[in-house]
Amino acid sequence: MSKSEDKPKDSKQVLREQLNESMQEYRRSNLNIFLSAVTAGLEIGFSILLMGILYTVFRNYLPDDLLHLVTAFGYPLGFIFVIIGGSQLFTEQTSLAVMPVLSGRVGFKDLFRLWLVVFTGNIIGGGLFAMLITWIGPAMNIIEVEAFTHFAKLLTDPEWYVVLGSATLAGWLMGLLSWLLFTSQESLTRIAVVALITLIIGFGKLHHCIVGSVEILCAMLSQHDFNAAVYGQTMLFSVIGNIIGGAFFVAVLKYSTIKS
Image (cartoon, rainbow, N blue to C red; front, side):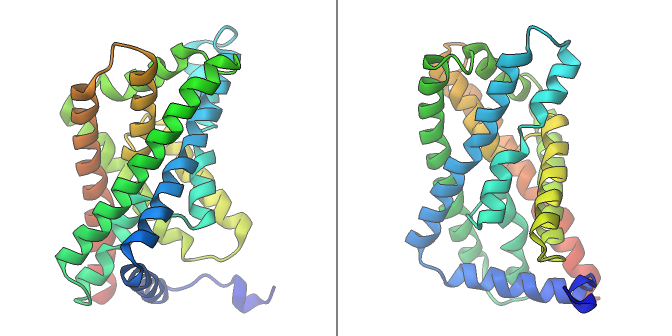
């Protein structure tokens, strides 16, 4: 690889590339975007699969804090599949999709359409994976039902304003992840960036609306302690927080800083 390929891109170049890629997404058909989003929802579920396996294997041997650290190392897996594979993930779109709106190339109607299609596809894909994992996991004795309850309670126990703040941090990190991925085309570097940032989200118990949806749905399908009201409230503030973190703290601030 040449030195010019190793040289980091400047912020204006990154912004141009983000704008160009975002515009390509706006030009895709709703069906194409939806199918990609369903794929992302399915793939993100592998994070919960690995976390559930790690929890089940180590829960009787490790103290709670260390067990949480070990299970957090499973969190990046689904993100690596989704992001490196190029599927449509809502929390990436919260920052990327805003750039063309800020530049005046598309309107808010187009933005909300893209967000809705991607979010719906992610939730459907994640729901399908939740149905599969809550059946296969216990049936094969690789995931205990308690694992699903444990992960869901970490998300649903905090008050709504805590969920909102936590989700804002998660959205902020996902927006930064989208930005950083444009600075390098090296596969190993991209995987390392995805793994590091999503590990922070997982270890920090931060609220990511798509992963959180799968976790809570798994608990709802395997336990009676979780219902649609709990799911709806947690998801509402997770989505709002993710949008605030990704759209404002990354897209708006970086765009305004670079353009000025």
